[in-house]
Structure formats: structure tokens, C-alpha cells
Image (spheres, helix red, strand yellow):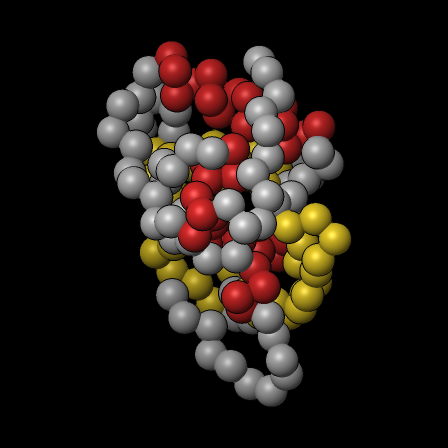
Length: 154
């Protein structure tokens, strides 16, 4: 495993819509291992492909005892709402309030290409949404909550 450089705000890769992963091999496994180590070293709870310079649809999330490696993730259902402070390893020194679903169901593949689906809530749901946004070129502050009611979309 190796630490990867974390791409910072202003780099165009953070605004690109990432391509799906179609090769499930040792190279992908090493990348996921490196991303996990990089995230832990930076004291984060999630890290997406573009944050390490890879424009592919993959992310790692770790909240408490839950560790996820999500390849080609998609939110297939969500419910509830939570408003909370978010920050990002790619945007040092900035944070803001963001509204996210309280509960999400995510469909994804694991490092071997096996289909998975999980239901997550609270901070884990928030982290999944944050990382999946990265895969579409969306940064957390694009969704800054300004107050008032706003429907959270699927």
C-alpha cells in the first residue's frame, strides 16, 4: 500500500464526470488499498477516485465499524433529511452546512466485481452521498444549505 497525493480544489479532474470501472483486477485492488490508506492517513471518512487523480467511479468510506469499497456506486433510494457541517480533504480550510438524505440505499460492485447493495443512515449516508457526488464532478459546497425547506433529490 502507498499514500496517494490528494487533488486540491481548482484541479479540473474534480469537476469531471467519472467513467465506470470495467476492469476488476489486481491494479484496482491496489488502488482501493492505497485510497483507504490515504484516507486514514488524512483523517477522513471518505475518498473518491478523482480525489487521487483517477477519473473512475470508485470510492471508499469508513465510518465507525463500517468500511465500504464502492465501485460504480449508485444511490437507488433515499429518505429523510439531515442538515450538517461538511468538509472535504480536497478543499482544505472550507466547510459549510449541507442537506443530505438521512437514509440511502446504495448499489455498487466490490473489488472483485460482485454486485452489492447496502442501506446506510446518518453519517455513513452523508459520506456515501458526498463521495458519489465527487464521481459526478460535484463538490460539497455546491450544495451549501442556505436555510428553508429544500427537497432532497434521488
